[in-house]
Image (cartoon, rainbow, N blue to C red):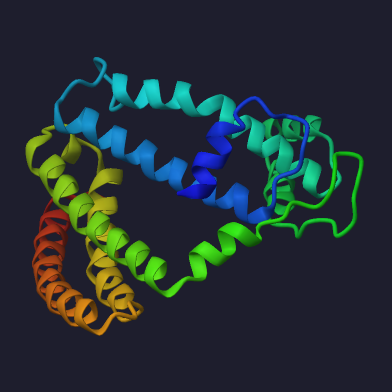
Amino acid sequence: MKWYLHAIRNYANFDDRASRTEYWMFSLFNLTFAIFFFCIDLSFKINFDGHLIGPFYILYLLFSFIPGLAVAVRRLHDVGKSGSYLFLALIPLVGLYIIALYCTESEDEENLYGEKPVNSDIAEFILDSKTSSTILISFLLWIFTSKIIWTFIVSSSERFYENPIYKYFNVFSNFIWMFIPIILSLSVRNYKWKIILLICSVGYMLYGFYEFVKSFMLSSNNFQF
């Protein structure tokens, strides 16, 4: 979350450099929040007529657009490229080169855009044992909450099952969500929390298996190939 807030605070900084970690951590949380507001619009059925998106999702996109653009430009600077390379994303297939640049390691020496970014303070924060457990526990709670929200959306939205793509996605997501909590709970270092999360994760996995079978049977009956 520190990476995300750092990018938000530097929303108008198009001059410096951004490390690979800073860019991808911002992208991760940005995507998470975008999905959250998308789910809020669906849950309260305040979508625009004929569309799945709603006002909360649009407002968040407007809020995050400038910070996202700035951190993308700074990431290109970090590998010695100009921000104008972003226009390559408009060209089909060639835009994949931009993703490759985003994944490229920082230039070790100072370049035209400044010195190499230093991430040690945030790295130490992440590697701290107590903080790591807190992050993992928070992420597990987010998984549980998001699954409840998603189940509510599927059951309350009549438009969800009108599109076969969303039916496939529901089957796939139920299968994936079953295994993530139990795998992550094994990574928690605190023994007490690990036991509690393992018990909850097993119960959640059984519930997810039930949802998966139900979705699969429903999908098999309704899909037309």
